[in-house]
Length: 75
Image (cartoon, rainbow, N blue to C red; front, side, top):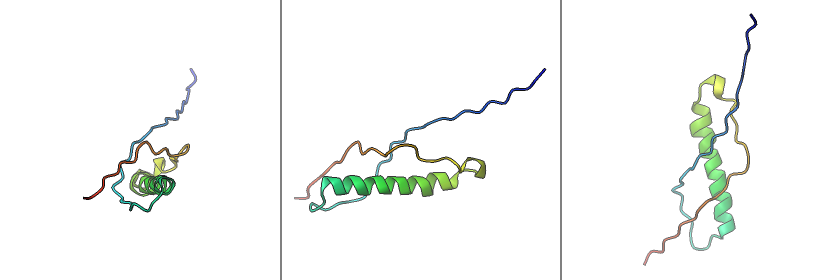
């Protein structure tokens, strides 16, 4: 009887809330760019780097998508 070795790939989507602040002079484009970069950096440092060595080859697949920007004005 022969043995069969199988491997699988799994893609997981994460929602990462950010607590950064941007001033009123920032454009939406700037906020989106900075938020994407911050989320990717946090993921690489806080998640990928903490995985066991055999899993550290995990990588980001696709472009991050900003799903919301919430603004609150101090009065």
